[in-house]
Image 1 (cartoon, rainbow over the protein chains, first blue to last red):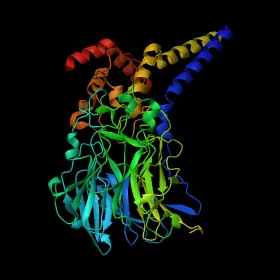
Image 2 (image 1 turned 90 degrees about the horizontal axis):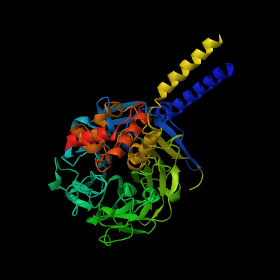
Image 3 (image 1 turned 30 degrees about the vertical axis):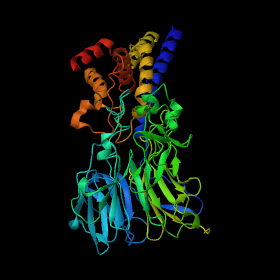
Image 4 (image 1 turned 90 degrees about the vertical axis):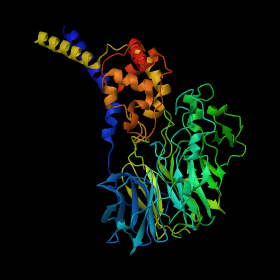
Length: 426
Length: 134
């Protein structure tokens, strides 16, 4: 009898534990700490947390007086732009104010104006006494495509009075039915008329529409990180490549292939460049553009892709390059000058395999072209769990300060880091 | 004393068995997990937590925990189900090409793995909703 009781109690414990273990995934989120993680950097570099409660800090820019402007993906206290100031020179923001009642991603400063974007429009503000003046808000571009998917509008400016605006395609591969297995790709893809590219507008003309702009680059699925490279005098951008090859075409692709294809492409763009989406994608192992399976491709055929623009570099698939910055400062050692920093938001379409990104990498450049392989510059943002949900921080924006420091924003934990070089190497 | 111990142990077993809802067919859960891994885990993730802003979490989702008919319709129609109310950035495809059996196994797995509803969805349930949508 005693043994029977013991047995039953033992069973009870087993059942209790089996119930508990099923709930483990549910509890993971609650265990995530919100304290700002220490990021890892190369020797000689150090970081300081400028602020850590900014909300969805997307792109950032630093003014010549050291003020930092942060574009928020979701409004905070009714503001879509935050101005951060350090009044006591301890490196931390102690005076934060906000303006602009719209969420968005893009932000830039050029020739006395601050530019910022919502998912529909682009605005600018006059910089009076070195500060963006909220009451000078002027809409310069309006009515851009916004169907939620890939809707963020990143911006950069050249030196000839033009602003470049990414208009992401609200689609994975321009199928008749988005992301539906078996649905064919549309040819020609009608999305390309008003999205899937980068448009050029004038910086100083109010309320421009598509008809006032120029489709500068086409054949882009989505871009979040772009920058005008002043030494090369060209537009560069890093693409978020297509998803789901094996789910759509299990007979043509394995899970491993979907995880590693396509490469996240960095382009040096010229007016009229066609980067190939949705008809083609870049296979970094074959080192060529191949035809997408929605358009008759089999993973090898290059039909229709022969003249599409090739990338100047390809990063690991699905890593989500969310910011690109060409470093022009003199604070960092020589090798960083005119090279590219790229902030990877971190992947999700590599599941169930290990995710990639959640870091900031450096790619050396010479004469406007990559001159070596990338190296991880800043890491440790995700913390213990390297997934979009579990990560404590996700790098999203990059900016260079007037003293050559590098700033990194995070739209998951709302932190902002300032990275400086104190080493002896030059 | 012994008797009291035995009774309490029996009660505990009953309580725990009930909590675990072990009436759901293990074979159906296994089949559902396979369908989930192939078709759903890429966006909703294996742990059902989704991708912030882009793909919704299934854990604590009112659609997963709610009446099964709504969830069946959602899978058959994709994000058209939400119309203009879609609150995540990525569109979800319609999964009408899956069989009634596959959807029944999938949603039995999803509801029990992520919401512990303890119920089974039958192919007949899926067939009925599919017929209404035509």
